[in-house]
Image (cartoon, rainbow, N blue to C red; front, side, top):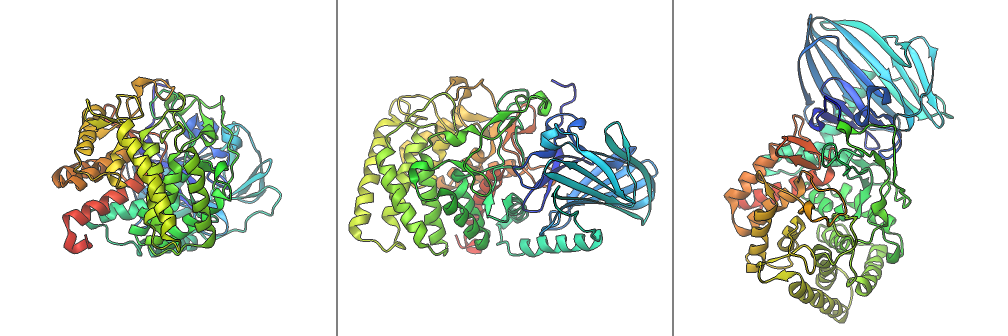
Length: 596
């Protein structure tokens, strides 16, 4: 492992709702995929070395750094206190038809010596492009289908397979840089005015954020989380990716490194709930429509995840030329979990459609017929073992969570009064729901332990069992649920945060060890609320909120011992869970103000 390991929380995200870049607190952009979230990166230093692609822009000598998003926008401002004075670097990506990354350096005091270094490496840090100067202060880089053009008042010079420049900025002066993308067979993007683009981008985000419903005591975190979800949305289709990155490790130096730049059906219900609670019904409808297009017409062919436009072929491969974040190998792109059987997604899709209709998003004919086909298929397969919510690679099991979500699918159909079907139709699905419910209570509950277990025949617990009362399988005060929550607290809490499951059992077919899973910790908050343990709920929520980095972003996991984030970043599921828990807790604490 390298002697210096970077920290995931040192990054902030900027994006244009089609792609995203990660900007380090040192002024280096170390991750960028163009033209889509799941395209090969042209800056991949995040998973390797500077030579794998990055764009550094910072003072030559830095004494102190602070940063923030400008008001309610995704415009990032980093202020450097340096030898000779202070400067601000403003980074953003306009939300529009073109694709560009813009950086503005503003002198705040004194006169500061600056350095910029641009290393473009396409195909995840592998391919060196053909770089040439096409005009004064304009250079292009081309590799296969990709082309970028850099325009700036500062002229960069080639040096050891990268481009660099030194310049100075005095108080009140600005220096602009525009890096724009276009297919290599298309004309270069036209020059733009950075000041105008900055104003338009800031206004776009402000107008969107202004629609956010009050999130109670944690409104600023709710709004920032919803903005993060929007930034992880592929605007042309409405699909929401799980995270902006691949292969950030769940255990530093380990091999639990996966590609999350795709859209998981599992996230649908939770995401729809978060968007609708925030007042964003347009985005919720776009996500619902993406979901229906991705599912298509055959439940037998249903996958657990898809590309941002609904692509099904997501082969997993390793990139041996990248050393990995903090030496964590292998670096993977694609995700073989797309080929797994995970029965819980039928319940999550059914629940998502149910929530959408209850939220006023009118059902369409395709959605109604699709649900009926899915239920008929699930009726045939729900007894099969599967790979479960955590996409284990140690062989299929009868996971309790998967069976529970099969129950959710039939239960929601039986109780859906917005669907114009006969009572006999509802009674039929109610009968199947009762059958599934009875089997779970018989096979997944261990009377000796006094709790539900991870899968039939096991004696281990699983944080996904916290969802049993949240989805309404049993009341939170049922002794079996109280015992299950107590088992999670006893077995899975680490420094007050919740692990997904006991990795030492080998159930996932991988070496043991990972961080606490942040979404699971928010589920425990929800359970505390349902049990009326509001002081504990608030304390845990505020502990989790305090794990957000300085610009309000969360990764997938957190290492309580190392006190650092782990996993892909920023993680949509973590922010979805934060939003849902914040609204639930706010309603419990302030029912008169929040309509609880």
